[in-house]
Image (cartoon, rainbow, N blue to C red; front, side):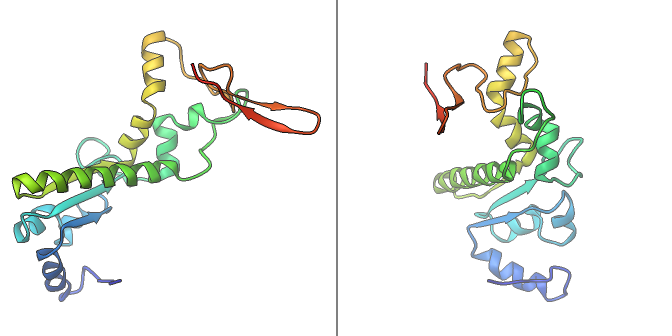
Length: 183
């Protein structure tokens, strides 16, 4: 493990030496911060053209949200994940874990693997841009498709399923159980 103060005068020399032999670099600064610290894609890919440079942000490196910081809880609300979570007759609820953070990490890992594979044939690295918001929207693809094609707003179903009646929680005198059946 290594900690480097990127504002220290000697930091650039250490970073450049590491990047010269690195395969992958992952950063999650707000847009423009890595560049201001001298560790942006342009600077580092000039040192190592084979470098896979993955940027993780709240809303992507371009567009109207590019300068906004990202936070799982906020993105859950803005993307609509909270709107479909929680009791059917209750308030929107956040998912029980930092799900958007986890999905974004998985998306970044998959993109890095694809870039490493592409580098085997091209010999060149890539800049990867993965955002919390895009990851959350991708997870809601089925909900979005349903709204688009039925014209009906998405609603909260609690522990039930939107389209499968045999997915629910059942309570008996001594037990509670979940039942799920496919189509």
